[in-house]
Amino acid sequence: SGYHIAIVGATGAVGSKMMEMLEEATFPIESVTLLASKRSAGKVKNFKGMELVIEETTPDSFEGIDIALFSAGGGISKQFAPEAVKRGAVVIDNTSAYRMDLNVPLVVPEVNEEALRTHQGIIANPNCSTIQMMVALEPIRKKYGLKRIIVSTYQAVSGAGISAIKEMEDQAQHMLNKEGYEANILPCSGDQKHFPIAFNALPQIDVFSDAGYTYEEWKMMNETKKIMADETIKVAATCVRIPVVSGHSESIYFEVEDELATVFGIQQELMIAPGVVLQDDPDTQTYPTPLTAVGKKETFVGRIRKDLDEDKGFHMWVVSDNLLKGAAWNSIQIAESLHKLDLVKI
Ligand code: A2P
Image (tube, rainbow, N blue to C red; front, side):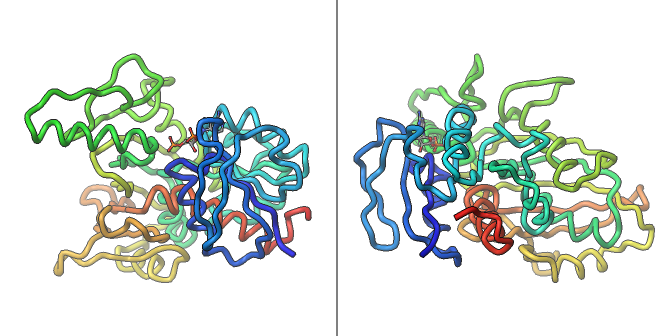
């Protein structure tokens, strides 16, 4: 026998990828339950050649479920994750609802898998931009220590859901046809104003919060300290949406503790690091881009170079598929780790 798995938000951009990634999981699966809103109930999706019927999410949907993967927005997680836990499931939540809760582990398996041992039913999947940054920086931190991070992101539209992708495609089509266009979703569906993303760049992801930073930027700053379990790391983020369908890119400046760190040494660490692919050779124009990273589970790193003024400062370019390592794949990896560490009640 194996696990009974539920996916909440199975019709969404991340939920669909969760189904694909689950097909590649190595732990035993007994059944898969697909959950979404009432609007999608009755629709059919394929899983390993089987036709699965989508059901409306209710508290009773979680009867008999061992692992519940949530990606239907923070409100849905707040509403239903406790119901799932009450019924004996372990929840892996892809939203920001529980990430900073002290009794919720925030896990990137390559970095802090052991944090899973303290879970009390809910485990949080970090923000997509945070995850790929952690995968790339942890091997460097282990070898050389890490004092400071300054990151600017170039984030894909799929992070804002299927409707945002559709909006960008419509805008692009209309602009190319020299027709009028609308903006109703980005930069952030809950905010007062909307701007076109097609042929544009929007320096706002999620709503604005304290000190002039957006909530997305706060997520990167706070989550980094929690995942690396180090409150002393200095982190500043600027998060920007660009008209790419999938694949987040990041320009990361970082300062290490060890003055012996070199570009070559960093490349050596990244070459053997789990989940990392080094694509770094200016002579052959080798560096990662979203189009080459999309569909892959790894985090791609290139453009590693020394800062010219700061002795312990370096720059690099990090790209990963935001729907895979940034969301669905990291969630399935967490499930794999839970299985390996025998942390799922069954
Ligand atoms: P539905 O398709 O039925 O609306 P995305 O991030 O791509 O926008 O996807 C959001 C996901 O969240 C979809 O699967 C969506 O299902 C799901 N969702 C939205 N509202 C609810 C709800 N009230 N209960 C359960 N799932 C919901």
